[in-house]
Structure formats: structure tokens, C-alpha cells
Image 1 (spheres, rainbow, N blue to C red):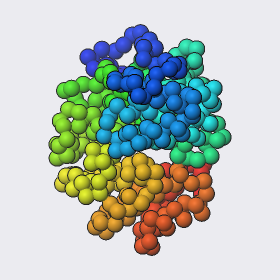
Image 2: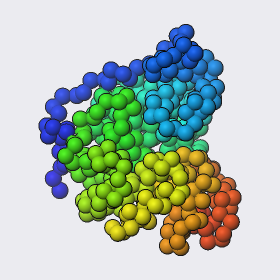
Image 3: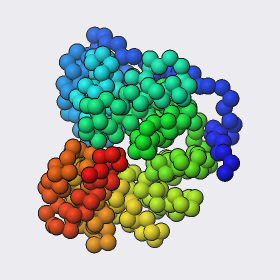
Image 4: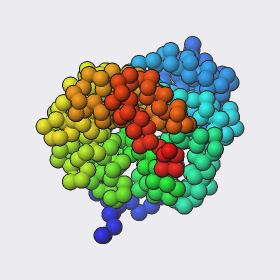
Length: 378
């Protein structure tokens, strides 16, 4: 098979390395406080000051009080800054900084930690970046809980894009140099997510208005699954919040990747509806004519579980579904819940707590191993 040549949005293949992105920099505390802020930059700095001086938990408590419903898209950048400042406070200790964080506002805290951690890399060759990247997420404290390991690797993908100046091919090459397939896929998810919606409001050159599924249609086969599992976030930017049009777009993507696109639709349905079970079920029904409703529901349930860091809310969605969708829905809850626990016994107990019906509980338990690295499936 011929090699896939990825070009930018203008159809040109870049010939020179992209410089370090100008907004990626080390956090430096100052005297800024929230009481005096009237603009976004000031708010970011003020929250960073709290994290740097009082710790991440103090900053995140105040953050959650202000951005509880995540309806303000600016919350992601603020969470980035909190993560960066906490990393500086902990003198570069990724594990300690991760342990004090949370996934609030689309995991912005974790992204900020990894962005900051990559700034001291000397040189941006993929092999050099990969060597640093492997060390960042291999700490035993991070690997103890699969949820933290995933956040680290996913945040790494975001950090690679920001640090390399949104060089998508270079970032993917680094992810593909990581150890296992679970690590590689988790990292690439962060790369493609940052490409679609950049943390600093810039438009990536790896997007095309006349082809909303690009760059998924152009990347190498080994990178397509993860790309298509995020692609509807880009489709929504082009067509607006019209789920029938999104479903039609998914039905028309490359053969072999249609299911991945409907999975992406489920994740976006969950986010756009603020994780409302009834709205999710109605939106995913738009995928039914194309055979994508099951995949839509599964990934909506996974997104709910991840963002609520538990399956109780997602179980409400699953319990109201017909039998054909109910089992995979509970299995999807288990896929994410399995990352929160360190033993099989704890995973079974977690499923029992949210699924009193035996069949639902069994589906959840089966799903708990699917979201784990192969070495931890037991």
C-alpha cells in the first residue's frame, strides 16, 4: 500500500517544521486576583495563582462553583491554566499533579499539565518527543488507576499539538511510538480533539470547510479509527446542531469507518445535550435509518459516565431503552467505570451499585475489561 501523504487545509504538504506555538508557555504567578478581573486572560491568571499558592484542589473547588454546568466554553482554558500552575507548584511531578486534579470541563486540567510538561523538550524530532512522552505517563502512581493513565495519554495528545505548533502529522508520529495500542489510541484521541477545537481558539490548518471529515479521509489507516470517533465535532461546526444531517454525513464516510463516526455522534450528542438522557435517546434515533443508533447510544453512555465519573446518570439513559439497546448501553458504562477501579472485585461492586437488574449488571461487568489496557484485563 502506498504511503498516505497528509496535506494541510490548502492542499499543500508542509516542508518545514512548525515553530513552537506562541501561547504555550510556563505559568508564572503574579498578584492578580479574581475580584479584579473583567477579561478572560485575567481570570486564567487569577485561577492559576490560586492553584500555584493554595494547590489544585482549592482552585478547582472555586472553579466548579463558577463553571458547574460547563456551558461557558472559556472554562476549558481556565482549567488548562490551573493544571499548568499546579504542575509548576509540584515542580514537575506529573503523578502528584494528576492525583490532585479532576476531569471537569472536558479534562482541561489534565491537558494543561501535559502541555506544560512538554515545554522543556530539547528538539521536536518525533523520537525525542516520544522518549519524553513515554516517561511522562509511565509513572507507577499514574498507571495504578487506568482513568488517570488515560487522562495522561489523552492530555499528552493535546500537549503535543500545542507544543509543536499544531503539527498534526508530527504529533501522530509521536503517539505511534508509544508502547501499547491502548496508549497509542488514547494519545491520538487527544491529537485529533485538539485539531478540531484548539484550546487557544486558533484554527488548525488541518481542517477543510468543503470536507468536514478531513483529515480522517487522508490519514494513514492506523490513525483512522480514532479520527472518525471524533469527526462529528468537526461536522457540527460546519452543518450546525442538526442530528439528521450529522447522521447522513456519518453514513457517507469511508467504508469500514461508518460505525466509528456514529460513535463520535454519540459522544457529541451527550455533550450538546448537557448529558440529558431523553435528549440523547431522541438525537441518537436520527442514526437509526443508517444502522448507527446502537453505536451512538454506546458512546453517549460512555461520555456520560466519564464526565460524571460514575455510571449512575448513564444508567438512567440505559434503563429506558429497548432491549436491543439496553445491553450495549450498560456495557458502555462498564467500559468507562472499569478505569476508575483497580481490582475486578471493585469493578463488579461498582456495576452492582448502578445496575440492580441481573442482565444489566452482567453487561456492565463484561464492559469493564473493554476499556482497560490488555495487561490489566483480568
